[in-house]
Image 1: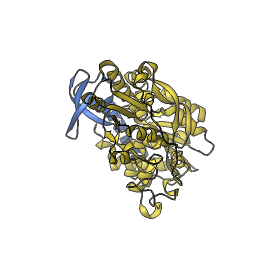
Image 2 (image 1 turned 90 degrees about the horizontal axis):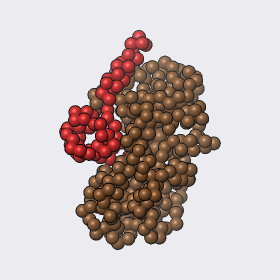
Image 3 (image 1 turned 90 degrees about the vertical axis):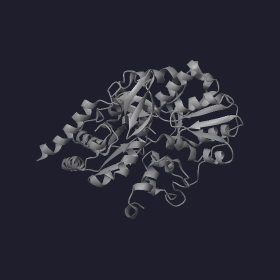
Image 4 (image 1 turned 135 degrees about the vertical axis):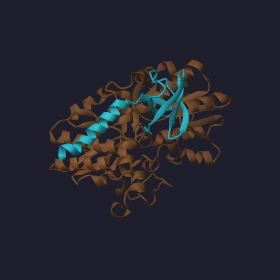
Length: 365
Length: 73
C-alpha cells in the first residue's frame, strides 16, 4: 500500500468517478492543477476519460522547468562558456531552449554541463574537483528549495570553497495569487501541489481560497488521489464553499515540515522573480540570504546575450491555462519532444509534452 | 520536478540512511526529517526525505474511499 499500488485500484476509481457524476453540477467548471507531477499523472492515467464532460481540467504554472524563463537559461549558458566553470543541474533543464542555445548544445561544443539527481551529489562532486568552479542551477519550488537549503548549509559548514549557486527558486502562493488576479484566467477550483504543501503546510494557501473564493484541495499523485481530490473540489463547488482541504493526509501535515521551513528561511530571502508567461512576480522567488551571498553565482562576471523569445511559441499562455497545448501552431509540427521550441515540450511534466505523449491522436490533434 | 517517492528506510547513520523502493536502494539524507526511524516510509525528493509517511492515515484514506460505493448503493 505504501508504495501506492492500492491507489490505482480500478474498482475504487470507478466508484469515485460515479460519485463525481452523481453530483451533476449544472454548469461547466474548470479545475486547474499547478504541479507538473499532477499534469503527468492526469494524462498518463487518462483521468479525463473517467470524468463527466462538465469538468474541464487545465494545467497551470506548476512545472519548474517550464516557468524558468529564457534569461536564466542564457545566464547558465554564458557561465558554461567560461573555462574552469562546471554547470551542475537537474536533468530536465539541459534541453530547455534559451534565446539561442540550450545547455545541451553548449555541452556538445565542449562546455562542462553535468546532471545530478540530488544537490548533495553535486556537492560531493564539487569536493572531488577543487580545480573547477561548480555552479549549481537552483530551480524548483519549496519542495526543492529546502533540499538546496540543506546543501548550502552543509557547504557553509564544511566546504568546499568552489561551490556556487544560481537561483531561480520560486514560491507557489504568490504565483497563484498573480494567476488568479489575471483578467483572462477563470478557475473554479485548484488542485494544490502535494509536495510543495508537504514543506509549506496549508496555512500559506488559506488566503488564496479566501481572497479569490476558489476551493482548493491538496492532492497526492496517484490516480485515486487525484480522483478523490476532484470529488472534494466538486463537493465544495456544489455547496458554495471555498476552503483549503487536504486529500493527501498520509503525507501532508497542516503545519508542514518545520525543519524544512527553517532551512529555507535561514538560507534564503524572498525576492522578485521572473516567470515564463507571467513576467516578474513580486516576492515570488528565493535568493541567498546575506550570510550565504558569497555563494551566489551572479557575482561571477559574465556577458549574457539579450533575451529573445521563439516566434510563435505559446508556452506563456499554456502556463496560464488560457491556451491548450494543441492550440499552438508549433505543437507536434515544429515543436516536438525530440526538438522542442518551448520549455513546456521538454520536461515530461510539461503540459505540451504530456499532451504529445498521452492524449489520443484523433480528437486531440 | 516535485516528484517524490515513498522509500522504506532500511538503516540510518546520523544524518543519512539507506532507502529502498522496488528493490532499488540509495542513500537518503535525513537532515529535514530527523525523527525518521528505520522501518518507516519516508517521502524522498532529490535525495532528501521531506516527510515521514503516516501509514495509519494511508489506511484511513483507503477505508473512506471504499465506503463511497456503500453510501451510494
